[in-house]
Length: 280
Image (cartoon, rainbow, N blue to C red; front, side, top):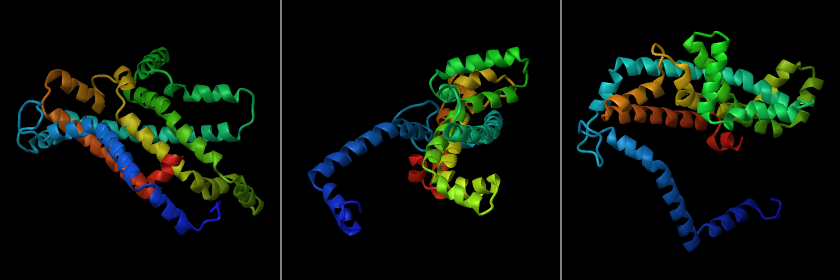
């Protein structure tokens, strides 16, 4: 330790710091904030098991029939398949574009670097509806009529900044001396990247990939402009259900999506560690 105290003493001081009345206040505030954040999700989950044919709270009875109905809904299953494939393709495209872009931003030394960085990250700044409309106009002028290709391009555009930001942060923490040592020992650039650099930025790549997948899967503003009646991802199907018949099957669909997000977070924790990934 920098202070000269042993680790056990540091841990004891930390425990004392988070004990007593101050710790009670801190934990109470933290619990209240977490409850405030999770309340909408818990409400949706509770309504999804209601025995009523209408959305009511508190839920009346308990049943899983709405999940059975959703899992037998051909439109929802087709939309789910399309959204998963689209999100996987978007994640791959965002990584293929975002990782090299992050390398260029961190290691590159050329004129206009700041302007290029601002341009690449601009989808995070502009409203998603504006971005979607702009993409629709550009793709229309280019004559692109394939809705699946348009959705893939649009989603890669709006998710790549997440990959770029996480990988840029990871690259700034990379020890370049290890790369120089590998090159000195005869490794080429590809081998150096694969065996030395990539393990050091794996948490940033994994976090960026997860963000890209979830943003793509749950993206409505951009999808609304680029989809058509034949290819409708899950967000459009959910919105259609809300407009037509708002029964507990809609919260059941939403709960399935929430559970998918939780599984993604657990996988990230299992693979690289959540704290390490978010630190990127």
